[in-house]
Amino acid sequence: MYGLLRIGFTDEAAKFMNWIEARASELNPDGSLQIMYGIDGRHELTEESLDHLEGYNGSRPVRIGNGAYGQMQLDIYGELMDAGYLFNKYGSPISYDFWTHLRRLTNWVVDNWQQPDEGIWEVRGGQQHFVYSKVMCWVAIDRALRLADKRSFPADREKWYKVRDQIYEEIMDRGWNPDLQAFVQSYGSDTLDASNLIMPLVFLLSPTDPRMLSTLDAINRSPENGGLVSNSLVYRYNVAKTDDGLSGEEGTFNICSFWLVEAMTRAGKFDRGRLDQARLMFEKMLSYSNHLGLYAEETGHSGEHLGNFPQAFTHLSLISAAFNLDRALGGGR
Image 1 (cartoon, rainbow, N blue to C red):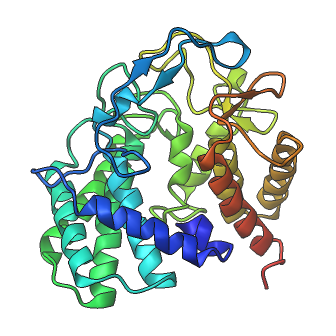
Image 2 (image 1 turned 90 degrees about the vertical axis):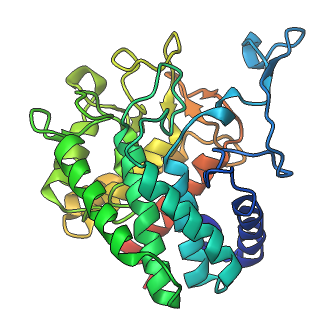
């Protein structure tokens, strides 16, 4: 929603919001959402392997559907509520009927945010209390409160405020590792996760908060030195220290690389050195696109494209990073 609105694609943003509103009107009996649906709105996404086919460079298995559709991923509520908040602010005012669905979703988050889940990376190694998931639960309730106040919608404000603040303090207490001086992947872990770069982007923390700057510095080290960054490319986490239920290694995640650019950009408004570093990282990332300026999900050790191609998430994070970097450098005056 943010990416489409920032570059003026208001009609596309409105159509996407219509799609989201349709899904929000088809909630599960308990008031929850699935983590994904078919592009036509279908709910069943049974995963199947097509053994008679092979993928790019001989990779197997080739799958259709997605077994993760039955997972619990608490972050989706924050992403949906933020999209609704942004569209109401920069697109068109949402309807009361849509609000009733969003209010029901928010109440579900209020009652269920303390559950473990599979997280944004859809790990298949068991549910955990992922910090990113808790951050996005905070976002869900925060944006619901902002939306309710902006439009004077009816809401259980007192309860929502109480739970929003409870989530915030729990993230600061259990998501922070004092030894690493960084936010970590899950409660009690000592593993970094690039998804925590989202914190200043969703306004949970100031980009110059000492905890955020320390987390930025920890992630921005090389893997050999305990970090996640290699030649401006960002790994989502250390696969050797994360039980994701998968074997082997993986490339760097392009969405994470652009998240780092944007987090550094926002911190760089008050520190020119970080802004210059963000610009350099962004320019390096541009060199990894193909001849059409497109990106895959991941970039391999030799600069090769890996995973889904083209990957929408990558390009949306590119737009957001580019917009904010341009503005910080003075191009957006």
